Image (cartoon, rainbow over all chains, first blue to last red; front, side, top):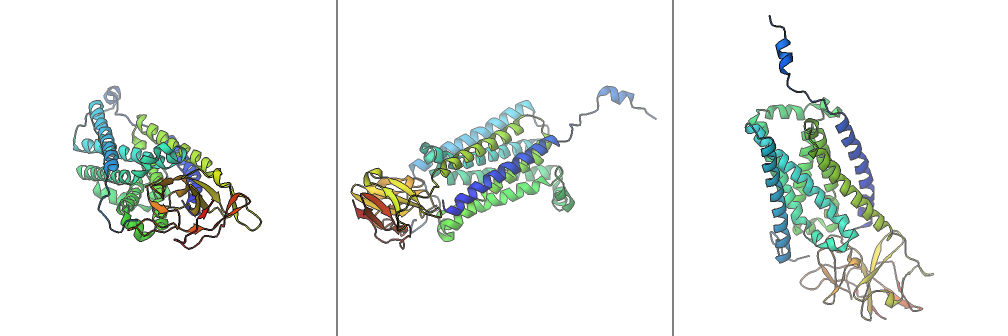
Length: 49
Length: 345
């Protein structure tokens, strides 16, 4: 590899590690809660006109 | 480089490795499809397309992880060099698997009548300002375009046409593609999937590649110290016997330029450490059949003048040498490529 390519490798990996670690952590932490189907009891208690 | 081109350069070794890679990828995709179809049987056409999207998508990610691991593995252990020799075909196969992922994704959008929705998502500029809610499809499209450009320019014709320096720089965009794929999955599939599979392959894959690159960089740093110079600026290599026969010692000029000083019996010659093919580390190769041979792809050069054997036309820069006080010394200023410059020791 040329000097410039070696320098690029040394700069790109730390930057990529920081960016992806932050991105992945936030993406995992900010996941929306799972919305399950309403259970049977809730359905029977729903007031009807 | 060759004086004429073939569509695909295959030999017995490449056919073996390509066959092995195709078999491994096919086994992974078939295994994924069978296992997930048993655990969660798809009920309709969109669910079926989604299954294929995940199978081919995860295969693409794992293949990119493997490709990015080959470089540092070869730096750390020479036994991985055969994988480097076959890396380009592996890269093109990755593009084909990514294409299948895109095709099944389009099929899913068609099956759910969501294609117009995709267009409005991609042009909803407000979404680009959010983190959760970012149009993750745009990240996938950008990564796919990079893979397309890399696969389209992977042939030796483009390497010759663009020059190795430009070609290699262009292909460093693979790192950007890998980062884009990571975030495409993190902001897309990972937001809905609650199994451990996706977090595990993302963290495990990226962690492995990162650790390997950091280790390889530490290993490389050890070769960066400039070599001691004599009074007039010539670099001191050492006694002729300190250069292993048929191999090289790499010396570093001020500014970081690396020079490979080879010994072939009683003859010593110095060449640029950059192979003319893909800028491989020539000094880590050896002399085979009288020719300096690059460890990456086997490109060969005469030690005497840095010229590739006919009919090839590549030439490397050579360096002047002298024997001073029993030590071999090299002038750090390169001579024009192809200039004879060996000495007898």
